[in-house]
Length: 129
Image 1 (cartoon, one colour):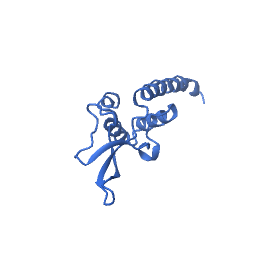
Image 2 (tube, rainbow, N blue to C red; image 1 turned 135 degrees about the vertical axis):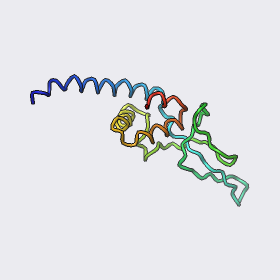
Image 3 (cartoon, rainbow, N blue to C red; image 1 turned 90 degrees about the horizontal axis):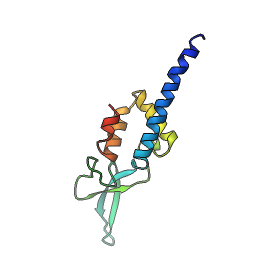
Image 4 (cartoon, one colour; image 1 turned 90 degrees about the vertical axis):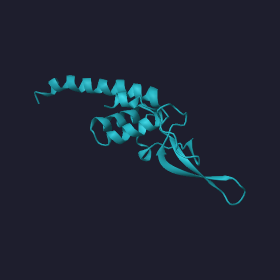
């Protein structure tokens, strides 16, 4: 019980860390984790193409260093869904903080780093190591 006042400084530093990195992630990567590679298959009926979604994350804006869908039959489109059932994203401060907390605990941080790199380029490699 006597150590609680001493831990307050560490807790405030930890919260400051979350605040700063949450705002940076929110500002830099908001809405950029929703791009997916779609395979275009020719439809038999009217000559239109049928799109089949893959789990591969890509850059909708075509950022240099980000993942671009390989092959002539694939196209990167906005799926409207974030990875990991919507839990991994930087679309609002709470979601960004949860994603940062997951990285701090080292539970799946490398997967989040690669997903973010695929969506926005090489900038996450500076932040994540």
